[in-house]
Length: 348
Image 1 (cartoon, rainbow, N blue to C red):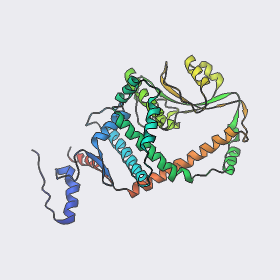
Image 2 (image 1 turned 120 degrees about the horizontal axis):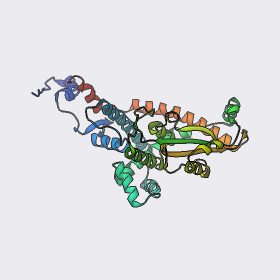
Image 3 (image 1 turned 45 degrees about the vertical axis):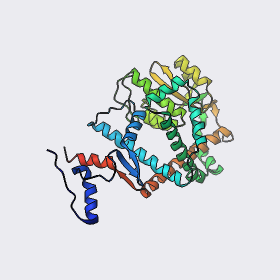
Image 4 (image 1 turned 180 degrees about the vertical axis):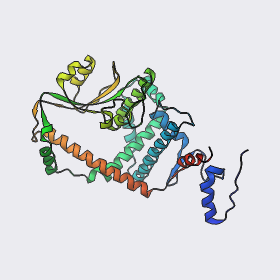
């Protein structure tokens, strides 16, 4: 028989007790039942949470009582909370992306596909056009915030570049022509032993196809290749390094799939391949650079730029982590879903 609890404790203390007991005992919640969390009073709904999970984790088990699913929802909600914190800061700074910016990015994403193909990708991610445009606006706005608050404060001097080169000179000596590659690999093999951050593994051909299409769309949308590789790539060796395979001798490509070899040799640095179906599964390749044999000199502008970018990214990652921590500490966040998870331990 379901028991009820009346909140009769007077004053502010009583109100606090009611709120804390709401999930446990059915006392009236201060927000709608569809609200999973609030950030400075702005709600994040369960429907939004489930839509994001369905879009980003198409292979995730969705049994409501599964611990793995609860963990997945907690992690996804934490990401939504962080995104909302950053979006509100961008809004406060007057950095929200304009309609023109959003439309331009949307058209860029849509361009490589027919209308039917593009709609299929949206369906696979359980998104509407409006959902995608909202995501584009959010991501562009947050990037503008990071550019202002982080990127504009980072300066890499010539002395920094020289010091790094001198300390790592041996790593710039190549015995033969090499290419530096990164990859995202998805296989249909039903193997649960994966090493990506999301613990996400396709279990069959259809899941692998859906997953690589989802990743491909996010790459074309401008999401960071290395982050996607860390989260989703099923190559245990390269996923922790953002998919970076390091420098590969061109002679080693002779052992590769002929189509894969041709694509790599025809690519230009910075280019990302379309989805490639190889015997091992599906791949997306990024060509980081092509390097001739011999000692690469500091006078080479490409060497300088590679070092400068690496140093910049290292500092940016460190400052971004600190920025997130400060932003979280300044925001008023109430995670109702996390509260309900804790409350459920006492009711089982």
